[in-house]
Length: 157
Image 1 (cartoon, rainbow, N blue to C red):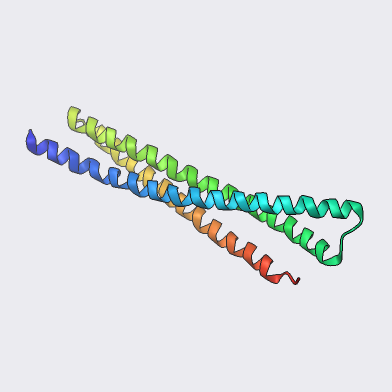
Image 2 (cartoon, rainbow, N blue to C red):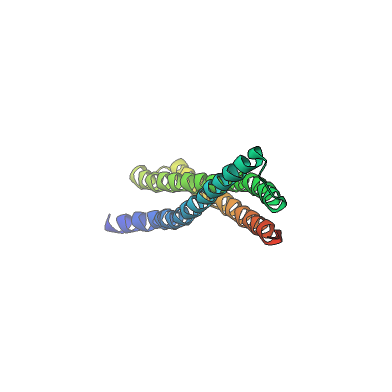
């Protein structure tokens, strides 16, 4: 009995570690989400100020270029924020799946039913797949972030 309890705890440990790992990934992505949203707000504010000058007919060529650059960046940032959201959702779903996997492993030890064992395995693998999807979204988001920096660097003031 005591040995089975130790085995059950050990079996539940892997999903538990993945929950912690996803928590760290979520923390990083939430930080990135805040940064991207803040950048959108700053650029949108600058766009409004420049658009007011444009409407008043007081805009210079450099300001027109800047306004165009801001519009392009805002479109790209809107796409980035969706990628971050998707990564956060994938990691959150993974946490839910890992928790479900832990509970299913516990039920498998209580009821000793082989189908529950396979169900726990499938749930764990779905969780790992969800983490992989989140990592892909995060990688694409990082690449897109580089594109936006390139737009800023190409501007001449």
